[in-house]
Amino acid sequence: GYGAAAYSQATQDSSYGSGDSFSAGEAVEWALKPGITCSILGVGGFLLPLLGVQFKILALLGAAAPIVAGLLVLAGAVFLFLGLKDNLFKAIPAAGGVLVLALGAFALSAIAENANNQQNNALKQPLPGGPRPSGPIPIRPNPNGPPAAPFPQPGNAIPQPGNNQPGNPLQPPRQNPPAGDNQRQFAEGELLNVIGELPPLDLQPPARSLPKLPPYEISQILIAGKLREEAGFRDMAPAGCWLVGLRVVQSTNWGGAVCGVQPIYQSEGQYVPGEYCGARGGVKQVLLLAKPGFAVSAVQVQSGLAMNALQLQYLQVKGEAMETEGAYLSEWVGCEGGNLQPLLDGQGQPIVGLDGTFHEDLTAMRLLLPTR
Image (cartoon, rainbow, N blue to C red; front, side, top):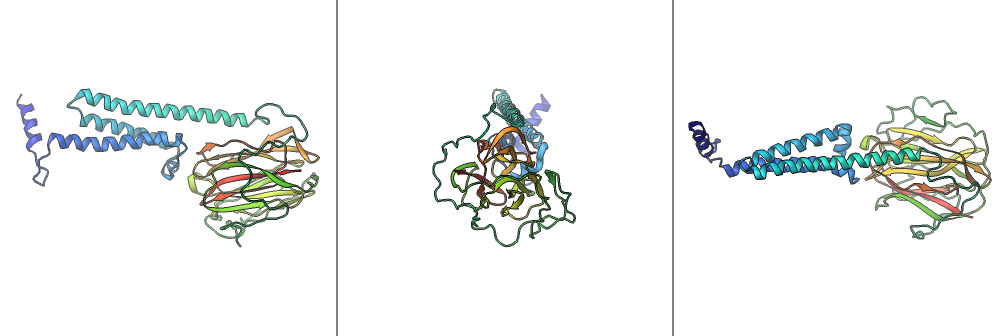
């Protein structure tokens, strides 16, 4: 009895150097504030990536982010319990509610990640969605409506504000990698935060020529991401050319987001590099190039605040169209994070240009398809 009375008296009368007493109500408030703060931060660490919201701190934490979020939730539950320990009818539900909410958010995150992985695995099949007829496939109506302004005709590359200015974001590596590898990664290290020219593409002439496309106009646009009021880019294939690859440039943001691309076209028996499209400051680049006789038929994008990663699908060229025989996918290039966007599928039509917007990284990309 004496010990309990002494503790009670000490709680009421103890001083913390300022002469003010630290009441029971203040003790509860002292514990509740960090409890609520830790709980919000911890649960947010699970829910925000699930909703497609990205923060650089989460990207820097990487795989440790769920662990940090779990520790914050646990700390929040402990603080809430301590703040309400004098009333167990409030303390237990408060602490338990935070833990249950965090477990639910973690479970939803795990389910979403599993579904995303299953969708990615399905995309590794050459023909997701079943077999398609060979030969030309009719163009579907444009779901985004007609373009706000007419697109340039073949052979034109129209610079947009903030892009296609003299100088490109990468300095040449010390050694060019050997030719012949369809998907190769360039040297790293000397590329960091250097504004210079892109390394020249040391590409051997393709082993198989592609037929020259007849004149066309642009009528269909496929979009991934959200066009924003930022710097824009647009690059059109020279007359008669097919899109056969991309040089993908990555930044340090989010662990390697896509900050720019350079289209690679093929004109009959030669490769024709397009303009670099995107932001400066790349630190890494990967070349994705179709096998001889193939061209890019679709692009898969994963994006949130920025374009996290992309993957190309290739179809075999037959005449002036493409068919599904031998279709295959490139590797994913980029970083983890973001949401899987609808497949930008040309449905067997050649891709003859791209445009979009960028800030520090690409934020949106549109593929341009012809009507013939």
